[in-house]
Image (cartoon, rainbow, N blue to C red; front, side, top):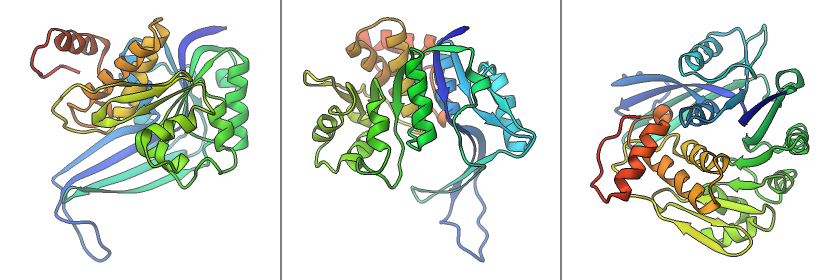
Amino acid sequence: MSRCDVLVAGEYFCDLVFAGLDGAPRLGTEHMADDLVIMPGGTYTMALALTRLGLDTRWANTFGNDLFSRFVRDTAAADGIDASAFTHLDQPVQRVSVAYSALGERGFISFSQPEVEPPPQPSIAAINAQWLLQTFRFEPDWLRFVATQKQRGAKVLLDCRGGDFDLTTRGVSELIALADIFSPNAEEALRLTGASTVEAAGRRLSELAPVVVVKCGADGAQWHDGTGMYQVPSPCVQVVDTVGAGDSFNAGLLAGLVRGTDLERAVTLGVLCGSLSTTATGGRACPTAEALEAFTQTLAAGQPDQNVNH
């Protein structure tokens, strides 16, 4: 049995990001971008953020024989992400998102085939994880997967995502109830509950999960643990790009919990890690353990913000 700190379950994406367009793409027209960046996305960012913080991480993801799978798989190897939980299929597994930005707005065109399924038993049978970092999938097969991991002794940190669902949608409340910690952002918490304030949304969600940590962007984070509501402010940083900040937050939170800190300190590490990730471009800007430590010491010393090598 192979022990690890965190098992990440979810699909890869290959993100093609076009920047500097002079307007939104329209049928019958051609627009030239100023820049193009190709990078792994989806739960890749979660696995990378955890790995960079020094946590023993397994990423349960399925790859195919297509060029997008090959690109992400090769990048994972270069980034030092453990491949022991990968599944390889002799068929295309294409998950692509094209993002374009113009005049301060973003748009997306995405493609994902085949359907995303839970990790097959052979790929994770020998993995004994302290924590499962789980994406928000509430289909019956995913509910069974999360429940099985809990039965095997893993604690569950449940992330959230956008979508046309709320607490009345079948499977949603059941999934949240399986979490030891549920970590939506403020917009997701409000949408799920229909509450008028983030605090009210957190209280409602804490009726389902024992701990709810709401990511509030520039306002830091608040958490509910059954005894009340607590807050951690965000440090002042020069924001370049917020893509991947939530994944870095989750990684910092888990780094604290795996290493035995209390919840307040773990949430603080999550806020610092998420904030630091916004000072560089893209989802791959998640900081290393050394960069996070240097940032923490700088803040503790009351020194002015400075550039940090990610």
